[in-house]
Length: 128
Image (cartoon, rainbow, N blue to C red):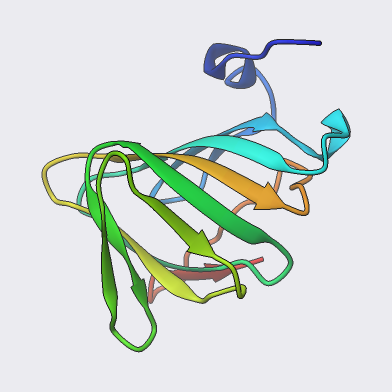
């Protein structure tokens, strides 16, 4: 058994600023749990195109509001108590409302190494 806090992670390479927010990689591949857990903050007013080619992701909202949008334009609102699931390696837009950060608990399978970083391009897109 062990514990780990966001404050602990901020002192390591597992604290990632990905351009439109931050990710505390609380549980990573090296922990041998078979999945990753992150505390993710999406900065207010941002819209980022993200694509996980090698991981499935589920995000549970614990603060703020915003949404996730499919490439076909279907918008799914996200607020505290909402989970969104990218079960088909879905290419998507992650959007935080203008007035508040969107705060998520993100779970990845298979687990992240923990140091992966989005590199948003001029269109706001990134994949890994």
